[in-house]
Length: 132
Image (tube, rainbow, N blue to C red; front, side, top):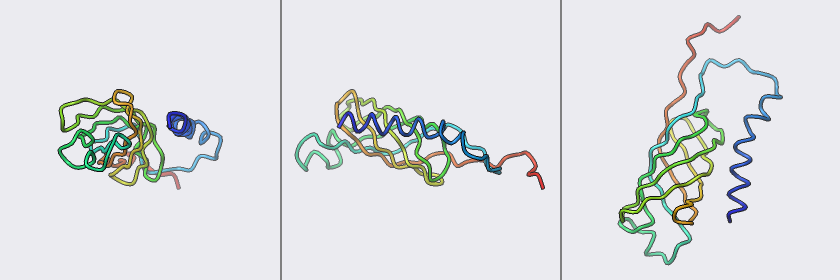
């Protein structure tokens, strides 16, 4: 599982490097790194009852994403406060869609994979005039 997560993180981080070799398409939006605030569920740590709200597998997460571009994978790092009072620290990828993101990451503090859903900042319109 750790190898799969490492491969996903590597793929997300190299996506922007590969995109530099493609033809540039003018855009009227400004894409930038952003924060993600949402809910997280850690899985793989026991029975089904451990996945219910109020247990140690549900938490509130704050992540930093490499981009807020819609329909794009973004590298993500973050911290999670779980409802039992414990803290998690994770790295992974997020799939952005407009003002929301779905994240898949690995919590290195708790040694569990996790899935997250939350909000991100929408891309802003560029203040530069679009050439004719």
